[in-house]
Image (tube, rainbow, N blue to C red; front, side):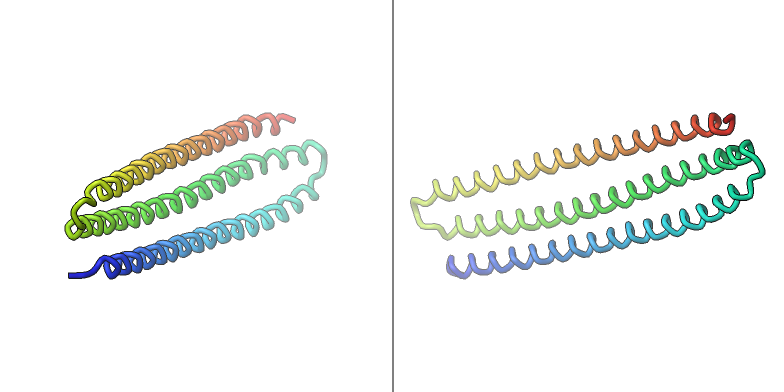
Length: 188
């Protein structure tokens, strides 16, 4: 049979270990996502640079204004398509990171809750007479904290879903605008 200070010390150590593990997981996911964004940006910059050089060479060889504008229009749609693809890829990276962080957080919270409830149950078994009200208040506080976390988690998920929907809407509108602008540019 453990004494209360030993139980509390063990629970505190386990909680600190769990928080360090969660922080480590968050850090790893953050670094992975930064690497993905850097790779995406480097590829986009390299591609843009190469395509811009080729376009400038083509435009400099134009024999008249009509050919110049025709070449400009020919480059507009692929550039718009690449910007849309870039935005979608970035949104995919962001959504993936958010999902991983949510999964890690949910697992950590569930594990911590399980440990806290077990700890409170163990304390209540060995609690002296007359401490029932204090234990009931502690259990109520844990229940309220869990309810608050659940509400926060739901609100966060809704916010992320709204952000993703808005981003997809913006990407689709940019794509449609680029598609409409390309034929007009070819006519010029």
